[in-house]
Length: 366
Ligand code: SF4
Ligand code: SF4
Image (cartoon, rainbow, N blue to C red; front, side, top):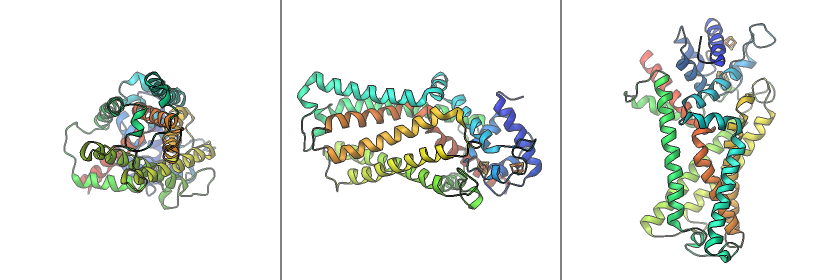
């Protein structure tokens, strides 16, 4: 007996698959499963987070429904994965709430923060809200830089703390000691596999979406979202250096590095999440985990709102729309930070930790 019924089901499926082994070349889940004869809760959560939900083992399986064995590995591991995010989250109570109402909570947080910034500006100087501002420091007419840096810095630090504590609990539960040594080649291997989304390829043919014709669309949208996020993070980091080291205040010219990085990242954060939402809607219901809709959709919508408001702000920053758009953009970023530890964002981090462990196991075995 395991801690939850979905882990009982995952154990049943892994036992069937361990006898069959037909899918062992498809991804990392099956070779990792073959290294075990019995599965603890931690093992099953590890396997669930190694799965990239490509769907290939469902389409290829001779025991999938309507067969009486009822083998559906992608969906079972998707539900186990979502439950693992809640099980390891810190503080745990918030994650259950978010899993059920993720989209609503994210939108309320974003619009509340935007309303707070607008109220703050209106209280200090109502004329500033719809005024036209240009030149260095124009953004800080709405909210002083120090107030902005303090509130967003605190939200970011909270997100980092919650993420570190939850990944630490995951790492310990999947059998790795805290503070234990991880070989550098295992980390590099995991970075390469994560950077390429190596296991989101259905064994080489692509990912199964709405039917049994595989494509690489989900992989492409994941890449656009992931690299878009990294570019936006790089843009913010460079802008911080500009501000504190070079004494140059935003907004910057369109050819300046923070704007170039932010524009490219913003395009990724619009096209990637839109594609992911579309792919989710079209996905074969047999593969879809409906239980984590709030968590999945909440995070993707926040990325989309961040990307769209950022690009609109770039285009309209010299017009009276700048104030409301900046407030909306900052609200979206703030909501993204504080919901990150409870939303789909964590899947990238847990998956990376699982890939490190997998690379480590393979090294020890060979
Ligand atoms: S998913 Fe089906 S075909 Fe693949 S290993 Fe498991 S039982 Fe065998
Ligand atoms: S859905 Fe894809 S990644 Fe997940 S276990 Fe099946 S083949 Fe592996």
